[in-house]
Amino acid sequence: MLLGGNLISSVEFHSNMSLVLFMVGCPLRCRYCQNVELFEGGNEISLEEVKNIIDHSSEFIDAVVISGGEPLVQFNHVLDIFNYTKSIGLKSKLDTSGVYPEKLKFLLDSKKVDFISLDIKAPFSKYEKIVGQDIGGNVKDSMDLINKYNVKLEARTTFVPTLHTKEDIKHIVRNIKSDIYTLQQFRNRCVLDPELEKVENPNAIDLKRLAESLLPYFDGIIKFKTAEFGEQIVNKG
Ligand code: SF4
Image (cartoon, protein in one colour):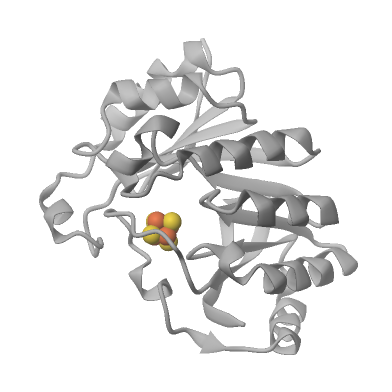
C-alpha cells in the first residue's frame, strides 16, 4: 500500500489517543486542499510493516485512524488494517470524503469500523460549484448508509469564506443526520489553489458565532475547530 506518513494524535478520535495513518490517493481536487502531497507518491509499505507500526504504538493508543487523501482509494488495504486493529482490541476510525458509497458499504458490512468522519464539503446540490465535481449524491448516500449501521458519525465542513456563505452552512446542517457536526477553520497556507492564499482565514470568534447560530437546526453535538484554540464544543443554552 502507499502511505504518506503517520502520527500519534489526541484529537483525531475524541477522548482517545490514536495512531493516524495517512493513505495516498484522492479523486478530488478541492481548491482549499492542504494535503497535496498525498495526491500521489508516498512510501510503498507492506501490511506487515503497518502492523509493526501499530504494535510499536499499541502501548500508548486506544485507536487507529485511517485518513488521507481519500483512504477508500486503497479500500482493500483499509480493510486489512482495520481487521488487524480490531483483532488486537483497538478502536478504528475512518476519515472519508464520502465519494465511494459502495466501498463504504463493504467496510460497514465488515463491522470493523467504530467511528467515521465524513466531509460534507458543500450543500449536496452545490458540490459541483464549491468542490468542482458533482458528487453530492454520493456523499448523501454515504451519510445515509452510515446512519443505518451502529457506527458513530461526525460530519464536518471546512468553512472557506469566498466559497461558502453562512446560509450554505445552515443549509448543510439542516439537511444532515449525524452525531457530531464540526465546523473547521479554513487556513490559507499551502492550499491547492493559489487564489485562495489571498483569502483571510475566518477568525476564531466569527467561527464560534457561526457554530452557535447552528444550534437551533441540529440535535447532535456541534463543535468548531481552529488553529488558535483547537477543538471546542458549542454549548446549548
Ligand atoms: S481536501 Fe481531502 S478530499 Fe479534497 S482534495 Fe484534499 S485530500 Fe482530497
